[in-house]
Image 1 (tube, rainbow over the protein chains, first blue to last red):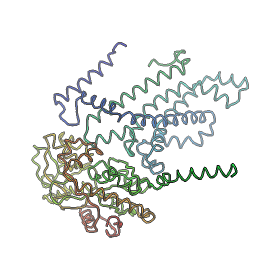
Image 2 (image 1 turned 135 degrees about the vertical axis):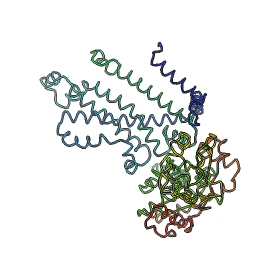
Image 3 (image 1 turned 120 degrees about the vertical axis):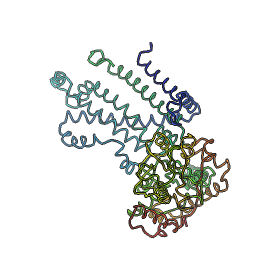
Image 4 (image 1 turned 30 degrees about the vertical axis):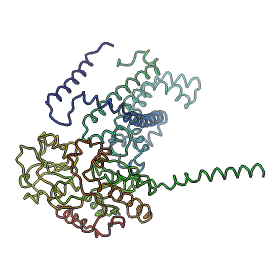
Length: 254
Length: 319
């Protein structure tokens, strides 16, 4: 791959980081040179300390994302195809949506404790809303002819939902999952920072309190790389899963 | 012997050989303790590392929180059996009717400097006393906690009016940067952040808020819930026995590398820095007199209200 101009910007910023710390433009023990940070990162990966923490965080993130996404798709389909559910649940969902997740962590700790159930729930709640919104958008965009044809052929409402509406909605729902994916990593780490002794989030707080700036930034770089890799992986998966959508050429290039 | 009885006999045999380890595993009481990643919890980690808790049949699961934010609420919610907490936060909860009881001492101020809290300023600031801080900004990690309270007492002691000093909240790890960057004029910091701040060469220490205002004063304790203590007193007896052996272990090694290594291991503070860090006095008990002094100081600095008699808050394991 030829280095694009975007890559050059990243490299330039990294060089600026290194130089600003080496030449004491920013004079603080909390601004270590990038090279020191990278050494700390490789050291903690090689020592075996970080890999299980990464695994734990990714597992909590994945479990929450899966639960939240499935719930988002199911509720989204139900809201559109069975309007009575929207009448019943719509206001509750709309009231919950704007609440910042960190604000509801204390009550979640009260009911779910400090371990995985609480952290996974927090991630699931975060993932739920973008998937729900996108799914509903997707249902609205399903071609009416397709549904009518199903009706003409005598396909029942449940089968229509599963075999006509759901596949047509998939590109929209998957776009929602992609948004949720980035948020999930953020929220999983935030939840780990608040309590318990698990995952990258806890490691980050501990290093902050130990005054170990290189390890702290190493964790931040690790999170950036993880987030980037997850997104690239997801896009690749998306292209395989809904190749017909891309074949139609309706999506924006990205 | 029929087939069935033979099988039963075999199963009985199997069960009896398995029974011993199974029973032992069952007898291990799991206790979740909320801690803060600070030097004051060294005895707890010593007792875990030395196997004192295991010897009492207790398995400790520590949960680190970066401030008191989830500690005491987690205790009320039943997430923790014991919480390391600063005295002011505990007493504010007691004032609001929470059934907190002191189950062990944790740390006190030393009789004289150095102690674990320090007032820090920029070297070129010219600020020397509480009087100089009037109209200026001073930071503590949280308002209305022990750090803030002892800091305000220091301002008064050195001729200032604490009401004329503006206090802001800054987490310990960011205090040195905020001070050097001129965002505040002074900070009330705690070890090991004091040692880290002094390493920059741009910051100096002008006061010791605890040992200069009230030598040997109370700082932090372990807290449990009254109803839990009443029901499961025996578990807490064992817990305190193990913890107090840890206090002995730590006190026997003050100033020795073994203790600094232990602290460096659980807090991850680099060993080089640990050598410059001041330690608190590690305590086993809590006295009514020290809580009375604390409440008196709280009343004086605006945390007024009705507090129950101190002696009623001290569980027998802390007496």
